[in-house]
Length: 310
Length: 310
Image (cartoon, rainbow over all chains, first blue to last red):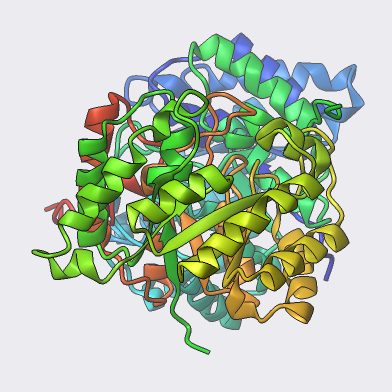
């Protein structure tokens, strides 16, 4: 097994969708370009959701079109695996029209979170996926599965590990090439991560598992390391820590891409990403959003020496 | 070896000394009481430094007097191991007068940091410690050693592991009961922590080593965990993450006590500290400093459920 990791950049989707500021489609295309030039090889570009429900994702079709147009002149842009979130059949039709070759579907592990977040029971959500998955397969579009609140639910508290494992298996059986195990509200600690991933690995090959950690309580990096030590090699991260936590306003959400890259750089684990380019993209985005992004490494960068003191 | 850890609370010294807001002696006594009632058993109360150089530490004598006065009526206050930082013989005289039974001395591992921070070479700093140590021993006062910039220096960059080990050994030989290994500017990653502590453990019993990590680049918790896995059981932490980083204004400094407690609570490792009480102390302090403290757990607390959705 390679010791290196792949980061799935979710800032343009999971990040921006939870920010109050709306970023224009043109600016999102620019962000995508900066991210790709920083080394991103897997990039979520948007979501085919109702713009009246999630205005931040309005124009996802334009973002994808803008990014795809750049591929003819830019080799780096051409080799990236792009994806978009699709909640239902209507969204899937739009996804097909956009030409995207990977979609993501999103399931919850607690009934309350499912009802509150996607307005249906877990069972109903899986029913909704059926036509989406059928259309994806017909159009040779890869499917990624997100499983949320795997370590705790803001409504129900504890989530059963057996339930997480069962739902992850269903997603794989439906045809997902990968399931992203989410700590949606950032409550996990390393022992929990170890316990759940050990159970998941018994029934799903570890290369089909990704870790999606939020830094709400500062534990995202310890959790990533715990999953890494069990063989997980794909992690979701968001430029600058874009996203925040909708259940605790003002708090951190998605782990920041820069922070994950700094950690792995220091450990000699390759991510393929360049920290200085990520920090440039962070500053560019922060200027457009009129706020500093939460990433700690984004604020200070690597160790730069001030010169010896005489 | 016990799996449980001891946290040395440094918010009142290393924390406040790096904050621009000055907190009154009376408020610092209140903070000390809240920290002790949250379970703190080792607590740094202040520093005997020149008040014109470090105005935030002015009144340390009053803080100690206020805390000591409370010991007659309050058993919890009586059982705590209190300490104060002492830079030189003059400070040591004041420390003796205060009645404190533990002092801390502070050495750098890079010449430039030593010159900039304590205005003398490393060799000169150890010379300065001699009368301090002699007076401490004579007065049966325990001595703790801080070793700073052990993982990187803001002026010189890389710091030699051999030098850190050598200086830590000198501190132990001088009579320090414990040496706190500091990542003063928060640049370390777990591989580095592992490498350095392995070398330290070869020449110093691990129970005489403490970890002092800053969260400037978000890696404090991963580094604490790396040191923990090597047997380190004492960690410095600062309420709310008080402190900041003087070399990168606006950035995080000392790791937040709440974040460390949340991590260890989740792992079933006892710290003796109560998270809810720490969060109360955080809010109380934040109100006096007119700013939110950086601790992530301090902002959101533990998982509290909002109730099931029908």
